[in-house]
Structures are given as C-alpha cells and as structure tokens.
Image (tube, rainbow, N blue to C red; front, side):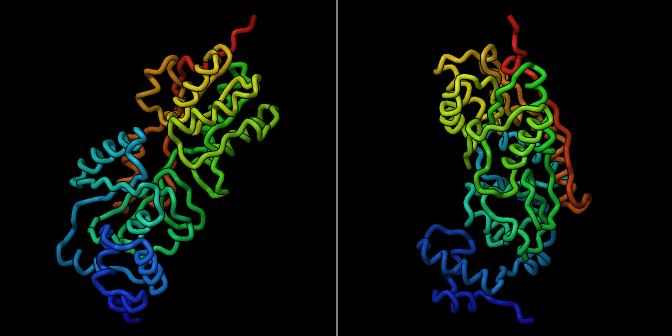
Length: 332
C-alpha cells in the first residue's frame, strides 16, 4: 500500500504543502478553520509524517516525551521531576510537553504530528477519546498515565482509583461521618480518573449502608482551587453535610476556603479529604488528609513500560496520609 504523502494531504485539504507542514509542526501561523481542515484530511487519509526513516538515520534519541495537561497543578510538576530522575538513571532525558488539555495538541503528540523524535511517549491524556487512542498509527512506544482508556490496547500506569476512593470513604465512616459529599465527578460519562474515584465513593457508601444523594455530588471537568471553592459553597448549602471527598487536593484546598467562609469548622463539623498529597496540603490549617500515590514506583513503572520492559496495566501502591482535616467526630 502506497504511503500517503504531504502533497496528498494538501490536495485533499485545498492548501499548500507548506501549510500542512505548519499544522504538523503546530506553528501558530495557520487560521483555526484551515488547521481543522488539514487535520481532518490527515485523519481521513491516515497520514503520518515520515519520522521512522529519520530516526533510523539518526539513531536513538535517548529522549522521552512526557505530555501532561497543565503544570499549574503541583502534582504534575512533582511527577515530571520524579520521572526525569528515573529516566536519567537509564541514560535518557525527558522533554516536558504541555497539552493544555486540548484535543488538537493531544492529537499532535498522540499521532506523532509534532515533528519531533522521541524514543517513547509517556502521556497523561485529558481530552482525547479512547477511540482516538485505539486508532493511533505513530510507531513511537507509548504508555498512558492515570486515565483508563476504554478499548485501547495501550500500557498504562496508575493507582487503583476505585480502591483508594473506597479507602478514603471508609476512613471517614470510621471517624463517624455519615453525610459524605463528593467533588470532582466526571460529567462526560467516560472512563476517567474522576469517574473511577466517584464510582469508588458510591461503592463505599453501599458497603457502609449509607444512602447515595445526588445533591451531594459536584461535577466539574477541571480540578483547581476555584472549582473546589465554588462547588463546596453549593454543597454546603445542605447543613447536615459532615464530610467531603475531593477528587484531588486542589479541589480540597478550595473547599476548605469555602468552609471557612461559611463558618463550618474543619474538622469539628466537616471533614475534608483529597488525592495526590501535594506539599500544599501539609501547610493548610488544618492540614488535609490525602491519598499519596507512590510516585517513585509510578515513575519507574512508566519508564520501564515505555522502554518495553513491562507490558499491560501496572497498578502502583497508595496510602492515606491522615491529617487533622479528617479527625474523628467528637461525641458529646
């Protein structure tokens, strides 16, 4: 089968081959409508840049790309540093690439359209679908972080999101909490970190014999402090809420600020817990209980997977770091 070339893509999209090259290299000189037309032609024709021959001529790059949605989340900053150290021990460098959580940029890295050569791709997806990942034709080895993408036969490394959620809810129930809310549910209906943590929360309520109340669930596609603050203000309109499970620590920090504004004592009236164990939650007042993933194990597994030393799914350990925010209820 004849390989599709850049000229065929240009003809299909009705543009010059230079425009196609600009799109493939993600240069900001292309009008968004033209870019969309080129990307559609690329997908329809199954075009991939001829990077393999260049890589064979140049040899191994000894470079791995780490693609993350956003470095404003401290978790990704620490993850990048930990991965860089793990790769360096094996003689590889790590290039940190920021997708912004946008479909276009994630597609660029997913399909090798970025025009750069890497020996492997460690990818934390945010916007692309499982179907898009399953259609990937770029030969660069890839491992997914965090997300479980349905119907995509790609190695991935993650903590057990459902089990860690069950552990958090059990911790709260054992501390006497009974009206437990959840912030950070995924409203898209996909299989994601948010949806798994939410399902673990629901399962834990069932195990504990506690009712599920949809009014105590805050849905959001972004997990930053502002979303935690806004959602917590809404959830805490119900005066009997005595605990909130936040899908990450940034949501929990925002929720803590909202609780303080509303005069809700933490942990006397309200317990708060989160995920990722970022440094910030050690220094809030009170300190916030959090699920701590073993980032060293995650980094080692991700690098080993992308280098072909591990296959399939790797589940890394986690632990709950208990702090004052989830102290048990004090009975009178």
